[in-house]
Image 1 (cartoon, rainbow over the protein chains, first blue to last red):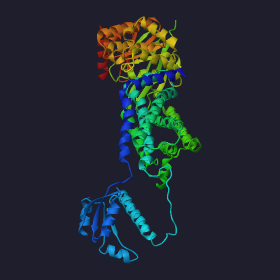
Image 2 (cartoon, helix red, strand yellow; image 1 turned 90 degrees about the horizontal axis):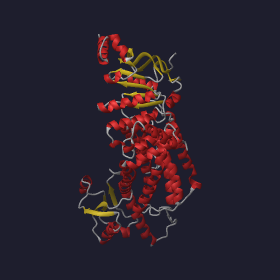
Image 3 (cartoon, chains in turn yellow, orange; image 1 turned 90 degrees about the vertical axis):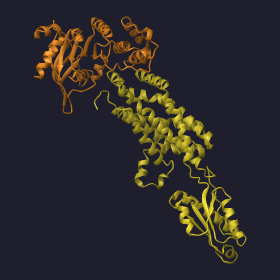
Image 4 (cartoon, each protein chain N blue to C red; image 1 turned 180 degrees about the vertical axis):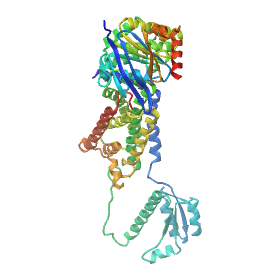
Amino acid sequence: MNSRIWTILRKETIHIRRDPRSLVIVFLMPIMMILLYGYAITFDIKEIRLGILDQDRTPASHELVHDLTSSNYFIVSGYLQARDEIAEAFLKRRMLAVLVIPPGFSADMGTKAVTEVQVLVDGSNANTATVALNYIKSFFVARSLQMNAEILRSPVNLQPRVWYNPDLKSAHFIVPGLVAVIMMMICALLTSVTVARERESGTMEQILVSPVRSIEIIIGKTLPYVLLALVDAIVVVVFAQMVFGVPFRGDPLWLLGFSLIYVYACLCFGIFISARVATQQIAMMSAMLATMLPSILLSGFIFPILSMPKILQLLSYIVPARYYLVIIRGIMLKGIGPVHLWMPALFLAVFGTLLLMISIRRFKTNLEG
Amino acid sequence: MQPTYSVEVQDITRRFGQFVAVDHISFQVEDGEIFGFLGANGAGKTTTIRMLCGLLLPTSGQARVEGFDIYTQTHEIKQVIGYMSQKFSLYDDLTVAENLAFYGGIYGLGRAELDKAVQNAMSTIDLSPYMNKLTRDMPVGWKQRLALTCAILHKPRILFLDEPTGGVDPISRREFWNLIYDLADGGTTVFVTTHYMDEAEYCNRLSIMHNGRIIALGSPQALKNEYQKNTIEDVFIHLVKKQIE
């Protein structure tokens, strides 16, 4: 290797080894983020506070309430006496949903074709409301079928089965994505300050009066972080798996290989920022802003890209996490390999190299802005 | 015999927006001499040095360093110059040996060449008691010597020193100048800026800068004779006062 790149690389490695702060960023921060995000971001809503307004008060109505709340999706947070209490219960957020069993419920059930039960849901949190409504709906569909089955056979019988994540646990979906988001942030943070730090301390000036070329500076400053970031990726994946029990169906070696390409792209993104800004503070702020929000919002980490407006869909093509998400979910949950994943990997490699080349071009070997 | 020039500057100007940092200056530095730039802060000394080192481009004018054009041949210039600034530009978290290895390495010195260069430098600047200590733990005077050593490992033909003695005690400053004399004796051209009047006396030739322009140029003795003053300090005050009037 070029001896000047080697010189810079060795010096950067010493910086990393002697700076405990960078090790905190690299190892402590991701673990904290995994815990924080892993537990906070969940769509599995449990223990919905359900109010009961039972105007029937018969054994049949009691049985209905008992059956509905025997799963841990609902807890009964109170019994109401009259309809006008519902609004107050919602306003005070004592209840998220209220089940209204009208008088004559049990009497109708034997005699009429349709028996009516009402559910009221607080829609101010649309997400929770939807989930609560779906739980209740499916409960009643199942119950109706059960009762009907004694009378007639249903003509079409749907047999649902969900692949790769049979229980639809959101952790299985979130945690691999979390790895993508965290790696993007950490890598960009790591390299973003390397050039700015030397600008601030004045050592960059000393380097610039030497015959070092910009390509040697940029590559010498990026390479040492690749190994560090790769170790970090392993730590994050192993830790996430231990804590959240996400299945790992594919080949860990392939994941490692693809992760190498991903961290390369992310580090190049950081150096791209670093080559342009003057201070470490701006570098860190830009790295955080430019990686965190797009990686969370535009990568398909939580929100499906296909349901975004066209312009955001287009924008998502330049978010590296989008590609790594496909890779890590594919390998961990589906157990697929390079045959299906070479496309996103190729994109990441091209993306990183492009940024690296732009950084080299834009990096001036003098002090002219 | 016609002297050969290490630096030739012709009518060079540098603006930063509306501000004229260096205003149409011309001078030559002879091979092997110690050439001083004396002036207050903001007189344009650093800007001039930065232009000659290829760190800044002039707005207009012509200049050559060791025969290389400062617009088009900066890469060639960088190979034959040494540079040390007031900031010393050392890595605090590296040991002395690691700093030397780094600055030697970016000039492409191999291990053997580097060892030889360090040994060479050690004959005048003995850093050996500090070799494996972190740079941040060294006294300022030693940091300055280390910075100088780092700047001359690749045996530059001309050494640019931008206020190299700022913030250093008088004894260390005196010793530092002895090192500069050693270098000049060895044939290295030294281009040094300072705002210390006593240091100005040590130069072979001196140019006094004020508001981006050179207001006097000559050997310290010639300047003192010309303006009939006993010290460079008096010459300097006399000239600057005249400028302000």
